[in-house]
Length: 141
Image 1 (tube, helix red, strand yellow):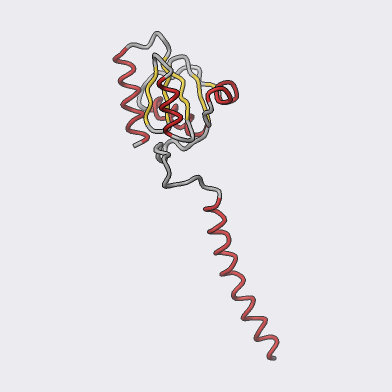
Image 2 (cartoon, one colour):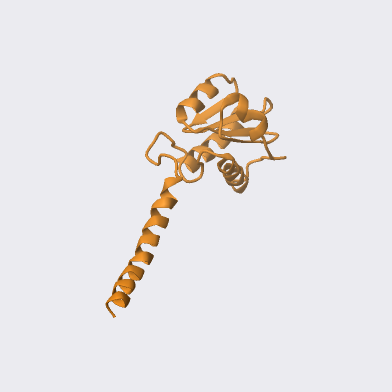
């Protein structure tokens, strides 16, 4: 009987250990949540975040025609984590806001907030740019 009692005690501690391991393991894959990533929940450092912003812009009634994943074309060169290009604006997500700032500084038609850079098509006017900028700023704050 003594061995059955020990076995039960060990077995009841296994679920608690498993729950703890799963919870801690789930956090292990997260990037530094307190780091300089400022894109918030709408935009983490990846291509999915860029698509989320496309959806937010669309929901706000802004034109984002012909969206396409541009991560493999753009990110190796500019060191971004994800990118979506449209006919009006390209959205690039960087792993660090400093990288986004450096890239935006090289553009004549860009806007940067946190880890996000918007690169506008030449035909986009100032009023349209401001509308995109306001929506994205709200989304990443």
